[in-house]
Image 1 (cartoon, rainbow, N blue to C red):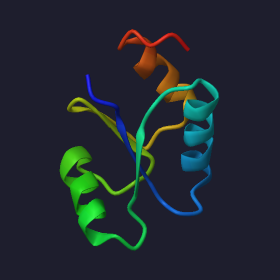
Image 2: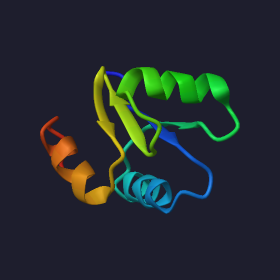
Image 3: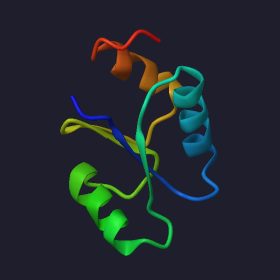
Length: 82
């Protein structure tokens, strides 16, 4: 399993909350900042069909426009103890 990619926007409070949660739980991830990065934004849109952040790509399974409340069941469904 690869580590998930989390696409974020600068100044996004939901993005900051999600990254803080992941860090607090010791969960690895690759952060991709889409603000000012057209290539990364296009990649996120191609994956999720939308432009809202945060967006997570976990081995091809995508969770888009979410907060911690949506993240926890997504992680649990993948066997991550949170």
